[in-house]
Length: 147
Image (cartoon, rainbow, N blue to C red):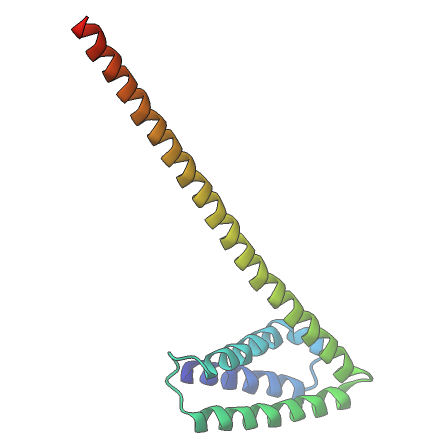
């Protein structure tokens, strides 16, 4: 989790410097997406068992993120009319797309597992049929040999 926090902080420094220098939000699309990704990773890892961060670090980062969000709101409101509302729309769309991508990954895994299960069932059925056919042929050969 500490790596994700460091990445988010580094991206925030770049983002805030660009906004202070008067760049528009649309010019920062990749950096903004990277920042949202980094903060999302921190949120996901905060309660994860593999996280190396402490509860205090999680709380401190949450507070830091709240302050950063307020600064971003200030920059965007100061830069142009409806800057903040456009960002909120962008953020909502970004989160929606991210959820759809995650759902698509889950659906692909489900489809792959269903296909695998179907293929295994077909293999088992073919194997049973082959064993029965071989048994039948063996029985016919023994019957013909005895007669």
